[in-house]
Length: 268
Length: 224
Image (cartoon, rainbow over all chains, first blue to last red):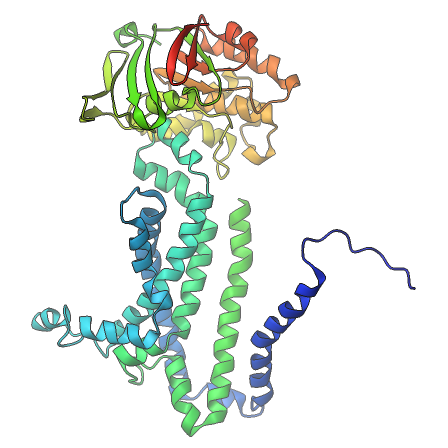
C-alpha cells in the first residue's frame, strides 16, 4: 500500500464528487461543444458584421438600463419584504418572484396584454400618444420583468443575514429611518446588492422569450443579441455560433470582473 | 447633564400580554439603577420598550419631562420613535458598525443630529478621549479586542448625549481580565447620568448603581 498524506477531515462524503462532477460536465460540455464548432478563420468577420454589432450594442445598452431599473425598484421591494411587518408578506413575496418561475414567453404575453396597444394600461398610453410594444422601451420592460426577482432574492437574503441589531443601535443613536438606510443598511448589504445586480444583468443579457413576444425582432430597435443568434441559426449557422461565443465571453467577463469587486466590498 | 429637563428622571409603566410582562419603574434623575433577574424575567423586554424597539400593549412613559409613549387600554395614543427619544442603548455585543472607522462610529450620533462632519469628528475625539480610546480612532472595528470595542461602544453611546443610557450586560462579552478596567470606566461616566444597567453580577450592580431592581416573571419583585 502506498503511503499518502491524509486529506484531513471533510464534511463532504467521497461519493458526492461523482454526481458533482457529472453536474459540472452538464454545464461545461455544451460550451466545449460550441467552442469546437467555432469557425476560427472567419470568426472576426462573422462577429463584426453590421447586424451583429448593432445587436450587441443594443443588448449591452438595454441590459444596462434594465439592471439600473432592477436596482432602483428591486431594492425597495427587498427592503419591504425583509423588514416590514406585513400581514400578507408571504403572498407578496410569491407574487414578486413570479417571473422567476414563469416561462419568459408567458411573461411576454402578459406584458403585451398590459402595455400593448389594446392592453390594460397600453390603451390609455396609446390615447396619450405613447406606444410601448415593439419599441426599445418594450425590450427594457421585458428584461426588467424577468430580471427583477434575481435582484430581490439576493438582496433580501443579504438583508436577512445582515444583523438587524446594527439598525436598532443606529436608531437609538438618533438616526432617522432614512439615515439608517443610507449610512448603515445599504453599506452592510452592498455585496448582496452587487451580486444581485450582476445576476440581473446576466439575465437581461440572455433575455429571449419575453422580448420576442412583447418587443418583436426589429433590427436596431428590438433585436438583441440572443434574437439575432436565433435568426442567424437558420441562415448562417457559423455566425450564430460565433455570436454565441461572444455572449459567453461577455457573460464570463461580467461575472468574473464583479467577483473581486464583491469580495473587496464585503471585506470593507 | 444640565437644564430643567433633567429634574424628572424616568418613569415607566408598560404591559405586554404576549410576553406576560407588566412593569412599573422609576429612575430618579442622575441616578443609575441596576436591573437583575433570571433569563426571561423581562429585562430585555423592558429595554426594548424604553428604547422604542417594541411597542407595549398599553402603558405610559415619561423621561425628563417629556412623554415617550402614552397608550390607553386599547393601545391607542402617542408613541415617540426610537430616534427621537434621547435614549442610547448599548446591547450585549458592542455592535460597532463594521464599515465605519472607530472615529466615524463615535461620530455617528452627532452626524445623525445634523452636525457637520468636521464638528462631529471633533466631538467623537472628545468622547474617545473620555473613555481612554483616542489612539484607536483610525482603526476598523474588526481590529479591536472585545474590551476595546466595548469602550468605543460606550463612547459612541455617550456621543449621542442621551437623556437615558441603557446598558445591557456591558461585561458579558468580556473576559475576566478586561472587566475591572471597564467597570472603573463605567463608574466614572455614569456619575450624574440617568441610566439603567442589566447585570447578573451583584458586585457589578453594587459598583455601578445606587439602586437595584429585581425582575421576576415580567414583574418588579422589589429592590434586591
